[in-house]
Image (cartoon, rainbow, N blue to C red; front, top):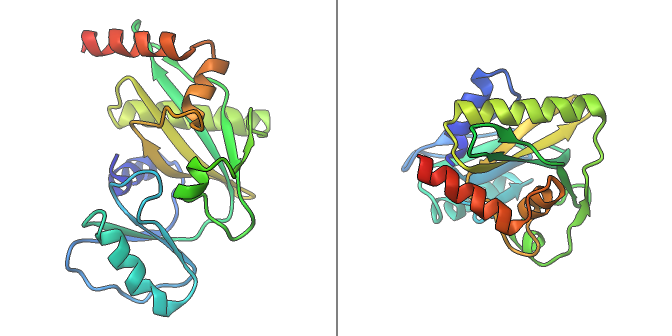
Length: 207
């Protein structure tokens, strides 16, 4: 899912997003207030993502992101807990939102590609969020699913901070590996992998 487009929709819904700017192909890199996160708008698994804390490294970070996807987002660095929310469309048209999962890294670190797949990330499941925050996250994920025109399944990644929560990104084809959070969340919500696949096939055939 295009990160810039999804965040524009989130902002229109009143869902918080990090401050940032979009760099189209060929556009120069303007001065920015550091630290920032530089990312391609269309890649997944944190490929091409760089946290920049020194001005001299900004151009290289943009080049690395452009090597993966031509359009690039430069966003203010957000210090927060990453809470992921799964949404599954059922064959009767309803949406299931199973228990949420949380990933943690050291302060100043980033949940990058290697941490996503090497098993070193700290996982809290279910996510340790208070009932009000949990309800707000589930409601935001459902609104985004509907507003973005998602089908079948999507995962919504939020940063939970002391001042509320922000949308980090929308993943319309979340991982299904043994380390992936999506199937783990679905199992806890009563959908093991065979049942999940059966439901997704039924929804696809209806479409």
